[in-house]
Length: 355
Image (cartoon, rainbow, N blue to C red; front, top):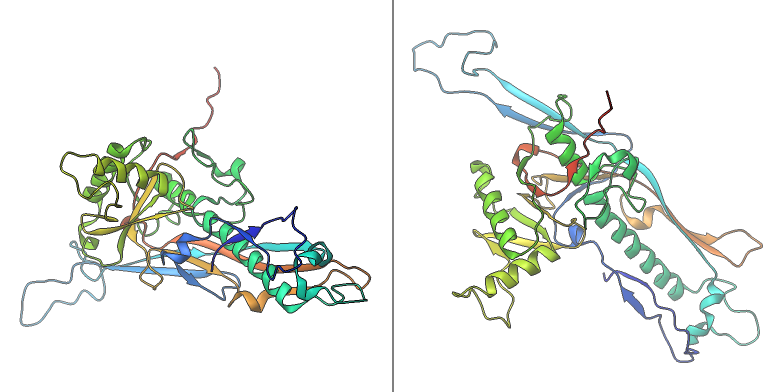
């Protein structure tokens, strides 16, 4: 599904136009590239449990010595259970429009005699619905990475000079990936650091291809050894970083590929996935899939779009129609210790007081 917004045709009467033309919007690459597992039907809270087992190897003896479940000095009988949660937060998708504003653009919806759009034509309804869903997906694609509950003022995160603020543009209903990472690496409370702490491999701005390559190497070296062979382990970066890196390796004396071609989207054998949505000067290395093994989960309180969408007249004496979707959503990292992040976003330092 292509993501789109309205294209206003000011100079054409539309006598033969069968559908509205559209601008292509940025879409939701996180969904399209399969980088997140979605858990639906969460009305209140969903627990993400993870378990780690201690030492199970012992000396071979005829009769093992029982300590009745007590933990040994080397971690015997030790199961460490950590819990992280998805707590979907409410927000709404809403749009009002007057179908008569579009009557000149659809030939099939121009009957003789009576006023057009006494009932909203199914084809027009389908077109407007498609645009609404795509705009919703664009918002979610950004919010997954840059949302912060309470908005920018409460996020407590300082963005790089040319970076998108965390929690801006109504991305204020739940904490996105960057907020989760920054809180996790700066926290000391057991709930926030459950499952370990994210690995920060670097905090510099990615100003050119050389800095991107250096950051990729640093991320790979910091990657936990036990997940390096995972087939779902991927690098996720922004398009600006990829373009700089692509040009940098193409300009090398020993070329990876010709300048007329795009370099392979790989580093150390792992896929590099450039997406729209992840903020500037930020790259992620982790196990990211649509399956339950994914390290990034989204919780929602709906089964699919059509189950929660209302389409109707605004009121009985009005020509206006409305689309409405009431949704609940949250994002969380399942195993923070298995996520490697390079980001120039930092925890905002508290202002110092005078003596």
